[in-house]
Image 1: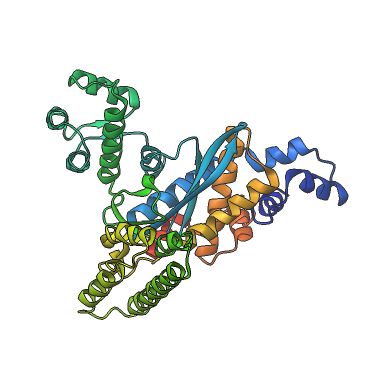
Image 2: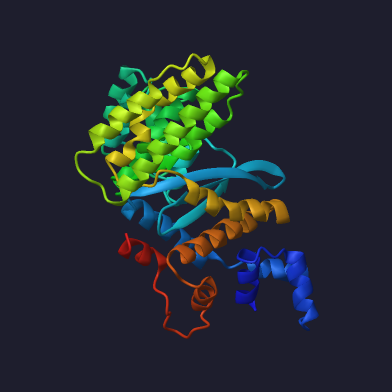
Length: 375
């Protein structure tokens, strides 16, 4: 019965009220509170597997596609972040959508901070005073297991921990250092819709979201409308060429694509808003053409948007969550369901396996192992 409830609630998007009515109608005397317990309690084994999936994906996947959507928890607004690849997907709901929050999610449940070369390189790319970086260099090689331990050592190095922008940069850098310390995100490309919090590691920009800016322009004359139409047609033609090249990358074509990119985004049409937008996109050339260096990455974040649709539907049907168990249950079970689908597994069979309904010997190995094997 628990497998039946979890499958209907997660995959079928059936609310607890309707699930209770359904069970009562087939002769089971059960309350809504008991149904909620079945859905949200004793899920630690699933949560552990979900964390292992994220760690396996970050260690083995050549790219991540990421996105987020609004969420509500305990009557307060929040954000659900999707992190996924070709063979895995996880969801995490939190209060913030900052870059530090995103980096913290990538730690896959860890809470440590590490000062290493990756930490210092991250700081050198930020507007951080050189004297602060020099003081932090004294801590190189150290691992701090908690926020308190990390802040104590910063204070001992005469670093002003009450300077919030500075502390934000230091926390981001040490979190990035922790990721690298654990062997995560070594050569991973992050493909995003250009939200600022996702611009970490090697970043690639979604072509679909980049082109949407042109769609939002509001030309005031037929000439301006025609200019927008011609530019959009040229961009989509270029996009289709990239897509074809990506299927069977031919060496030597990269220079031609870069020249063509310069012609499209370097043109001036006389329509001020359009020209400014083209110039802005031209400055993102490296991120838009990342696929020329890494043909295995996607040109868009459609997979993330498709994954997030389940969260959006659940939010519209059931609203938000109230308890921490409810929030974890929603994120974990949705993530496991999506991962099973990407791995070609039946979520219903997976649930029975993990709940011990298939005997002592599970038929489905740990999903994290499958994510790594198929990478």
